Length: 168
Image (cartoon, rainbow, N blue to C red; front, side, top):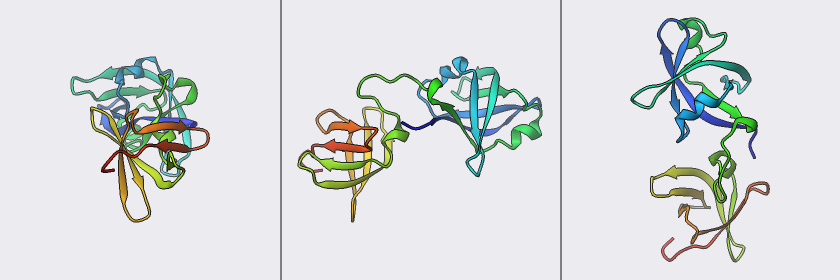
């Protein structure tokens, strides 16, 4: 499992008192109410821990955060474009057969017969079900994230076993 999980990206400052506007990268933006602190990773991927002082969710689904120590618009401007992450302790608890996207990226994908298809490079969230984009030697293979296709996921070993359906 990853050590940190993306939960949002800072889009802009909000107001003059250091609030930031965050595009949530979670399907449960209300979770920001329960997170005591957030990790901000700068351009060099160096983490900085901030206590969350206040949370508001806008009618458009954006999250407004006030972080301790970010007290002016200029302070907030420095965070623009950076990712907000939670550590494993504050990550959502997953149901069986649910995975964090960050844990899936980079997995080697094999058929049930042991043939290497390629490396999982992206997860498309389509609504009905996710679609895994696997980079093969000369093409991309799109795999629907359904039980008929995804047979085994080994997060620790970074391996996925799949059954290719007709036409894939």
